[in-house]
Length: 401
Image 1 (spheres, one colour):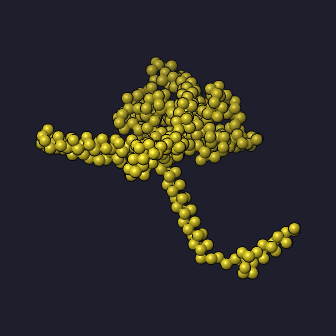
Image 2 (cartoon, one colour):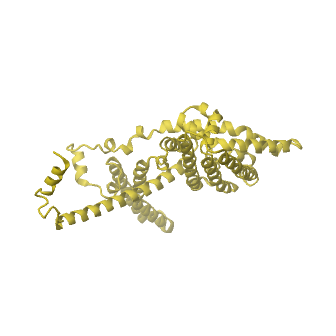
Image 3 (tube, one colour):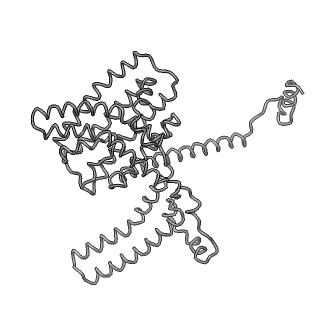
């Protein structure tokens, strides 16, 4: 059967009873309209969910970055994001765990909302105590507070056991609770929802990746920073030698360290931190991208040094860390994208563009090194703040200790 016969049969089919031209029915038009509305609603839900998940992810990373030792998870997440971008070549691949962050954020938000009655009753009891002292009315309010607290704890436990979604916090589902208590229904929300799988979170691997990434960066920064510190404590003329040596060595280290960290995330070998030849080879294949990404990373880290002029209180330590995540996370993704661009090229760029990129490095590196050097005179931690290189290490000055 040739194509003309097939076309003839399609035209003569019963579905085309109007001379081969289909007449759209009202039902079909209504169905298309309904599907369009449903598709738009699903798109809006997905978009709002992704925005909320990203906000929860940023806040979560900022909180992790203020906790000693645990903050290695934050650095490990950045390195894992860089690895994903290099392997895929797409920036969106570096935003990991949106669903998990959204689930945890909803659970925290629902818990906070359910705790509002407890806080309100506690505030009323404290007001009665301040005005009338420990009288009978105060003890009555204390009993009310205990009852509300017990009910709230039970409601929260029940909501978390069902999966900690927003609807679980808003409605207790008493019928389901009765079925579970009588043994006629099993509750397996935690085993079904993959967002609560600790194995899928890979916390151990992320933590270990962050520890090694921190150690490799510190190994490169240790000598240049020691030179700069020596320039502030050594007598003349040794202090000038220390400042000059520290400035030159730090500029050289800063020019390659972001890419060494990103390459380490891909190879998962600590020896990758010392394979400078590979970075130089990759630079020749995408010099402008390397220059742009390094400039963006260094410029993004400079505003964080302003926050070092005063000791941050411990209870507010996560707020500057929020700025740290917002500034450094895109910078690391940009560096990874530049590496992905160079890896996928098979030949070097023209020598002219390599020269332009190398010359463009000079003002960026010198400006960064000079600003970092003079921040020791306004930082709370003095000369030892030179070790706090935000673009490569951790937000150490935001610990509040």
